[in-house]
Length: 145
Ligand code: SF4
Image (tube, rainbow, N blue to C red; front, side, top):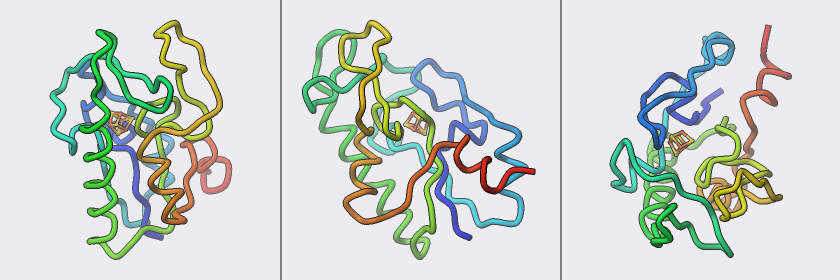
């Protein structure tokens, strides 16, 4: 399979706080698959580290209340273009709760740690193009050892 993966899950230090979300079980489960690492926020030109951002009323804003929606959506588009250039992907495995990569649950824009049903802007784009998406736990539930 060709699998797009949130780059932070593979150990890239691209999180907003300069850290990563390395998941060694996921790295092992991806062995033998073609992996396309993507970080939509870096691809959108955002720096690392960067301010924490959430989706508020459909718009991505940072914790100073500034709109960063255009950069997030440009990065999502760039990540999708990279996936297409690679020949398309069978599935995207994505970091939960992120305003870009979150699948099914995201923070509500109040910066209070409150989760609501919804998808990150990259996931919204992938849904629009009928690309299957899942979290690392969902992927590991099927392909993990
Ligand atoms: S945009 Fe996605 S890949 Fe990049 S740090 Fe956030 S969750 Fe990870």
